[in-house]
Image (cartoon, rainbow, N blue to C red; front, side):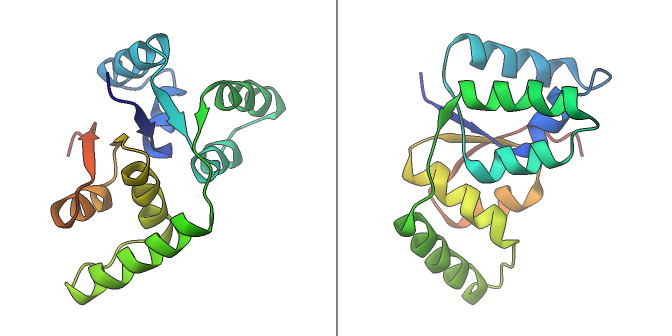
Length: 135
């Protein structure tokens, strides 16, 4: 089974009790199958939005348990190239989204998300995605 890189847009809903059960079920299954990856950027985005110290510590422990995909100089430079090429094609997306998408592609992961920018990137690249967006 292919590894998945789960974006903060999915994690945020995963940790909210009132959110979509299909998303929660899919993430829980991926965790049980040990196919979940994160990177420091995603962990940072999720952690900075926690409501309190208890939540921060719980989510930090979770993030540390998943496969970490480090972002090195090569990933940054490939991200810069991708951003450059996308802009030449009239596609402008946030730098952080380009970095996350490049991390997924370079590590052969499917990117799980709820962010339209990743679908724009996927249309122009080899990025594999699974969108949980309901809109």
